[in-house]
Image (cartoon, one colour):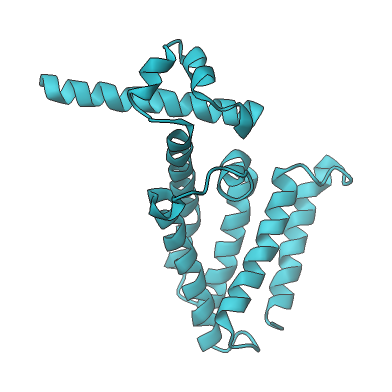
Length: 203
């Protein structure tokens, strides 16, 4: 390995180290406590070192959001292998919920935490999220074309379905289901999704 390749490898490793530390702080202490100084303390480097790789906290958060968006895409897109659009839509929904339950910190960062949004439309994470959402809306459109829904308003149907699954996951992620016994929460969520499956065609 040449000097150039080694330097690039070392830079990539440092970036991974910084992002891993930022993710840990976010997961354990929340978005507000993610800052350059805390990250530097955790990885035992000076804050000045962090600035060599990321210009500020926002850039670190954007990098984390990209990782979260990529993880979500990889989790839900196997649904694309299902030919029937209705079954594909249901599988997408199940995978969406499963992603949120298994990776609540990533889901929180993508859809709940009031992370920086300025210029987000120029970020890779945003474009990745848009691509995943387009797959979802195209699947809804295919269901509309096959007359699985009473309505032909694809945009509103997609938004309504997304609102439902987001609400279901958000309640779980932010631990707002404490009025139910812990052992029943997952079962309740699964039954709720089955119910919306049956109701969805009335849209």
